[in-house]
Image (cartoon, rainbow, N blue to C red; front, side):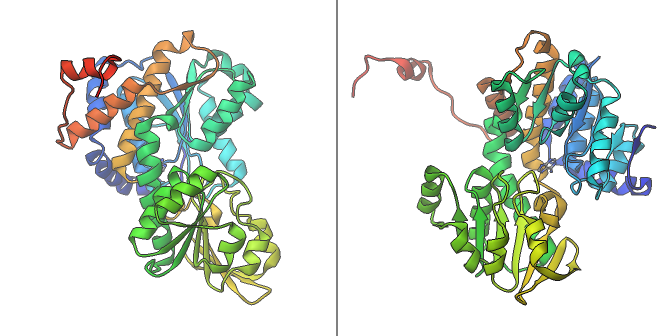
Length: 417
Ligand code: ADE
């Protein structure tokens, strides 16, 4: 067996988790059944760099069933579920992933997945694509294409594409409607609250809850915090996003003001230095601070350290900083993705659609990669509607269909009132 994981003894627990996820990911199971017969990914070597969770295990098993050879690493030092990694390793998946790896180990794991000389890459956060581009450009020659799961990764890859720096085409899985409109909103909304509650056991009702960033993820978190009775404040830099928040009943103010009144802070911006020293200095005693963005640079913990006189882990994933001014600030999950580090990530039901998009992206690249340009491709409207339709079918929900007459009406330019 190839790979490196924390503890093989955890495999039984991991297998049960995967079984649970499979029971809640019917679209993935339908794709596995369908393409397990025709094996359209035969001959493809897929190197993946994506959170090792029970849902990802379902994706990996489905890729293998469709004929692919895979090699896997996690895409965040704290997001790997060690029991799931053990289960995958025990069934022969080459996987290099464990919870709590150092930055050095993180990149070492990615390097191991490149030894198979991939024909396709699958990323969440673009670290694998960047490793190929910056350290092993020669490997790009045999790569037909790749996919990217998350907003921040897609932004950076689009910038690379615009500057003609991409060495192979990328499919922007994040930008599928069946990804961002569900995963980013309902997935991040629920799983981030889940992470905060597991790490703190705190009552949200009556708390002042500050969400930095009112994009899809921030909106989802704000909606769920409001539903649990919190008084929600959002911060923004984009006027239209700020207006949306206000019209949805969320208070809006700059972080300099919110920092003074918040009980709980969560960043969901994709930007660095959203909460910095001057904010920590004015926070209330007992403020809780966390992040749900992909990278851990949104909360500047280095600056918090300069204010800290002592710290202790008071609960798992919750570190108490006592500051020079005598106040305590609690940092969750080391400022890394609180939903994956302190909880289990998005629920299986939403990952079902996100990973159906990943799977279809792999098929698209395998089939068309050789003829694609070196740029970022969007998921097609047909694929989005097909995945949404499949999901509805698994939920036993039927919807209406336009009649021929209505289809004609849709584009008729001589119809009046
Ligand atoms: N990103 C957010 N939640 C996830 C999950 N459950 N599995 C994989 N990636 C995720």
